[in-house]
Image (cartoon, rainbow, N blue to C red):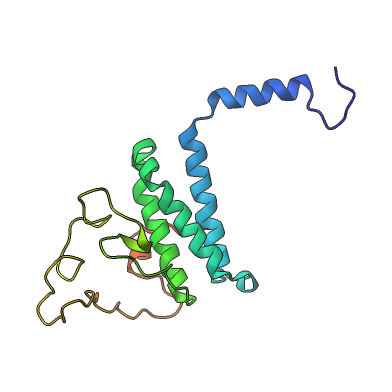
Length: 174
């Protein structure tokens, strides 16, 4: 037995090993995704009491970190992917609200934030639609110009938006 107070006891080591036997990698992945989303939301400075913590580069890093894990999560925890996508969407909206800018402009044929899609595919979107790279422009659209989504409906201050009201939007801390 070690006399060093910084070393774990035999009992602590056995408890740690028992925990490792129960722990699954997908649980660690999900815990890390939750931590990234929660920390990213905190770094937006939009959560009351966190205004002085605003750091758009940290928010972007959290978004990109979760997005990088999505292919693995789709395989390891498919039932959680919808909630994770909702949370990342909310984080992306908050990022834009604080004036965050996307990473460098995406090269031709690449998906969001410059990430290439699988070989032969148009990227993460569900196919190339009107106004997308390689697609014909929508009626009334200038060639080479990206499609513009309709403007969001204005909400009343202090009220939840339509996605939050539906109960599908994950709000950290709620």
